[in-house]
Image (tube, rainbow, N blue to C red; front, side, top):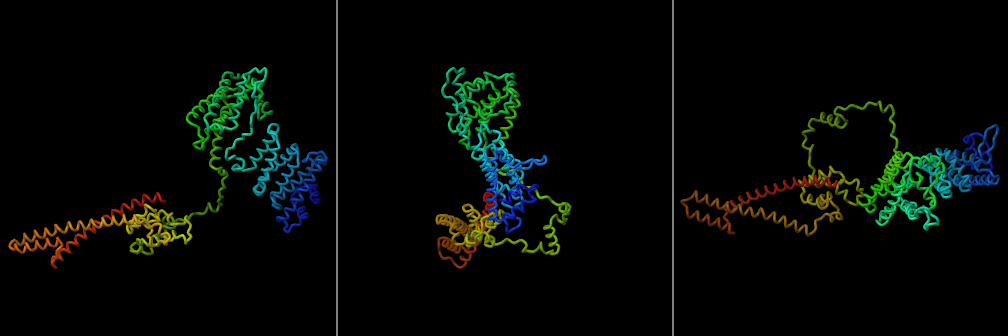
Length: 607
């Protein structure tokens, strides 16, 4: 500690002796950076020294930040405490000690000081804002600095220390990044503790209407918590009736330009107070004050802007009747602001501009406060810019290599294996492996995410596997995979249910019965044609013709055919089967075409 006391008194910048002082006190293992236990030891020493300096300053009756200051040869030397803070700040900035140490000392200093001394301490913090805001220091001490400022705000009076409170808030706004969420009020909570107290009973000898006085100040209850107006219509009706009375009074008592000039707003700004007095005896004077009227009318515009704010839930949105009343009241308020001197039109224009910008702020909060900062683009070196791009024969490297490969192998385009349709089992095998849970393949790497792969697979299934293609409607692209490729635990998910199997069997039975019926219909006319041909050729052999006709009838009725008749019947059956096969192929082609179309349409929905 004595070493640091001597270091405080040394002249010159801190970089000339700060690191040597730390090495002399702590004797660290490394020459330029302290370990964790060494940082803790140094922090305890500095906090103890700071406490002694503050105690000495209080005993001497001097201000804390001025203690130890002297004038030598016309030059004013720095006080002991600012000198100590400069040394610690230099060590933190150079990363010789832990970066949050300077913030901890500033917090201790504000806690040990009175509010008068805290103004000087905060002035030091403001002067070092650029250094404290560096990333290596900000990341370590932002929470400590936020806690320090919040403690100061709690200790200050919102009515008497308005300027100091504003300095703290402005510092926090500059210290933290624009997208910092800690002070954004994401939930939109209102400060309902800010109550406006006014008289409930009329005093003796009152010269104004006391009912108007109560009506006027009761509006502050709604301005304090605008969210209370949306759930119920009773409060809204009471608010509109009270606001109408106030607006009628303002319209009945307009202010002249002379009254506006009599109130110098610049002088009023220097003695600004955040709340007006609510005494009933002052009501008459306050109504003649243009600044007072503007405050109330601007409060109305803020409330209307909140009720129409974008991004709300449907239950919080105003009804159509409320929207019409808001619009009419807003027009009256804007007209009164325009009529209020001085420079009413300019003032209204600025207020409208502020409220319009506020909508962007509301949308930003509703979207989750995305970061405004963007990473800078990488600067290209001069060599990269001036480097010439290679020129290819066919536009790019791949096409040029393909063309060169074809030149070297003329038979490449005529090779029958160049274009080959894979088998359905071979094509769907990779997707079946993805569906196996034991393989441990993550869903984002599954082949079902490839639209080209799924589209080709559906075309192959439409041509080669109609049964699997029909499962696409119920199970998606994974249902098209042949069941033989799937493991047992996955296969049961895509197998058809018994009811589905029976329905499908009935459909196949109906399809099989139709060609057989057509075969019987074709066989009978063929026998009749053959019989008529025999009668036409062999008119002289009537008995033989009758026998042949009888034999043909027996065949059709289930009799035993002769070998010649059997050969004739088998040839007719072959013709019938060929006709049925052609019809089945036509149906398959039609289903394939429809399947391709459905696959292409449904694939968009899957992808």
